[in-house]
Length: 280
Length: 257
Image (cartoon, rainbow over all chains, first blue to last red):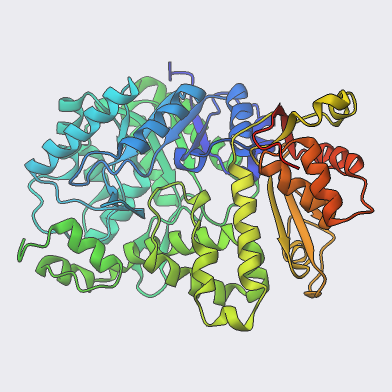
């Protein structure tokens, strides 16, 4: 089903008409479903039109899979409505939490990777997949803090999660790069140990140095083009594991659609390169 | 873990700038990396309010609005991740600020911004063709009511807030930047893909208000004439229908005139 997808773009309302008219081979679009959890109106109508022309992926930020509580039933129900309407080719979320005691905190908050957390997140993913009637992919988020109490690394945690829940994984190469920089590990080694057999999708995005602390603290801001070092990691990864649907994310300082298409073409070329085809 | 405060409870306390009551989170909260989370959460809340109240932002300036939004988010953080609709209580929150006493247009502008959001995300609905009204037998006027479109929002003000609001919205033309003392109303409608705005006079508003109350077309016409004896209720009804104010004709729930 997803083999025909190559490189896609995160879609913003300002680019709806351009997205509708775009026709590149393998192109697809991804949106945050939370932005479409409304009763009606032009947003949903536009997404209907884009969906009629291109494959669509729903990439959630608010299921709060790593919270010490099950996903909110009303939020899950609203997600199900969107999935039934738009029939997305991919559905994904994060290994993070964002809703706690009825308040939404718009970020991907961290969790200590303990055995207890693995059981809890597995249970939450299974609840989601049961409610939606399909597998989701779970993404590695960016990291900024040296949490105490980790009992396993992220690769082992996500591998356990995929094996226990049957979920797929979304490997965000930019998040690996940012986390490696901030927490002091080798991003290439991290990617080498990642359980790539579960990876259904790859994300790429731009980051920025913290305004106060500079390059010592990188922020996964989605506000800039993908960095050269992230492109290099991505090309190496795809050359090793073969092509996977790959998304260019951009959420801030949105450039012209053509600029994003150019970035997307770069990923498309890497996915179509002989090295990727040999690894497939 | 310590002292009965859970890890996630402590984490969100620290995000909100409160003492976390948890030694590990207290230590983490002092690190530069924690500020990334704190800044992102607050930026998300404040950006949503600023995006959802553009006329207030144009009227007060971004710096003032963002400070008010942060105070609002402190007291009323969003309960759902659909931030496109965040800020339902923001106009009432502004009404409680000292600045509202000095800026009488502030709260009404916020109410209209909020109404625009409600109209924008309202359920899709039919649009009553105005020609349908012209074909109605006279005997049906006392029995039928014009059902308001799901996106319709109507307001009446003692001053020309609608003109000021239109002047402070980048998505509308024809407004002004001065608050005139004349009374004025506004209807927000969504007959097609975009929310549209139409200023109302007293006769327009009286008729629309009666329709919103479920009163019959005859009763609505009477209310219109009561507000403005020289008005032409049939022409007003036709014009409001042409704007997209109505979704259809239904049995009136309130037939008193």
